Image 1 (cartoon, rainbow, N blue to C red):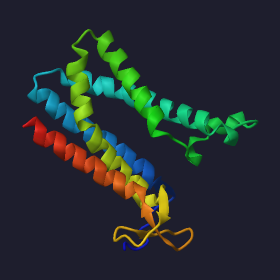
Image 2: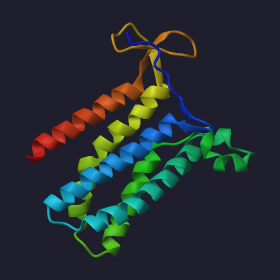
Image 3: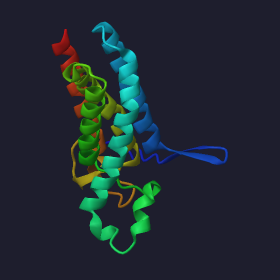
Length: 186
């Protein structure tokens, strides 16, 4: 059993950095750096990866919020301004993935390059970025599961019970997928 590892903020003087957001940003950065290196190895335009990443991340974040609002509409009905309060949480991986895919295909098609060559690079690093980003979910225990006596169970800070921390499993999943992709690449 893991101890209560809940870690929500990093206080630096008057500034409070949200752990979840920090790890999501680190995941994006790590994935971008690895994708640039992979593009260089495949003799593709690294700058297109960087420029495309801006639009892909932007539309992914928007899609993530929109999908969350649509699937959790009861939270927002009658309080439309709450849709803009992203600091209160509420993102959806599904919406982010759809948004990222649309933005990527449109961007690379607009640049008149072989879309699938660039998408291949981005899909290769996606599990790595997700693994790093999901560390934020793990630390804030954002996805508590059922009560368990499994050795990876963690004491949930809200009720004191040992529960599955799905954020940890998503980190492990991303790391295994990226390792598998890397193995298959060589």
